[in-house]
Structures are given as structure tokens and as C-alpha cells.
Image (cartoon, rainbow, N blue to C red):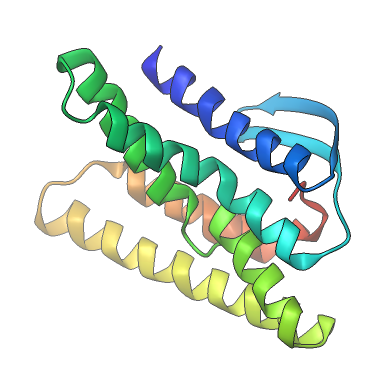
Length: 166
């Protein structure tokens, strides 16, 4: 229940910055892979950067506000922190990847920016997978990170992630 609340708070951060930057929310869809906003975005890349970082920013604020409270709020605080850090990974379909690509588009032509963004996403997914293999084999880690990083890697290789919602 706390994870669901943290995810909803995260999405509210995106929606708030979408509205503040002049965008319009058209709809929200839910799937096993997460929540996707359908929106009419402002034309500037800087607005897209702010919208992408809005969710993690709200999560980090929730972490700071709740971290010294009772046990339940401390757990909620930790969930918000990890959710925010996870979403800041520079993988194209996560918030960090979306912000990174918008930053690159401020300075580079579209083809170069998207190619560089894809390359950074693949390198990040590969590093995450390598870490997960090490943790699993040598530190009795959970296979969850391994499976998640494998899903990231294959999603980047085989699916068109350029049509994401921001």
C-alpha cells in the first residue's frame, strides 16, 4: 500500500509540473510496467526536463519530510527515496533517461541526441545487469534486479521506446 501511495505521489509530481509548464493532461494508463501519462507537452525541451524530474523531485521531498517520523512514515520515506533514485537512472523510458534526452536535444541535432541517449541507456542497462549478476552469484542476491535489468536491456534492444509519454 505504501508503494502504491509513493507511485501516485511520484505521478502527481509529473502532473503538477506538466500543468505549471503549460502542458495538458490527456489521460493516464496503467500497466504492469508502470503508469504512462498521455499529455500535450509544452514545446520547450527545458519544460520537458522539468516535467521528467517532477516525479523524482516530489519523492525526494517526501523522503526528506518523512525520514525522521515514526516507523510507518520512515518506511514510506525509504520507498520514496528508492523509487526516485531508480527513476533517475539514465535509461530512455525512465524519468532520468527522458530528462537526459531532452538535455541532449537542447545542444545536439535530433539524430545525434537520440543516438547518444540510446547508447547511454544501453550502457546503463548493461552495467546494471553486470552488477546484478555479481550480487546474485557472489553475495547471494535476489534475482529481481537481474530480471529487471535484463528486461531493461531487451526492451531497449527490441522495442521502439521513442514514443513514450515524457
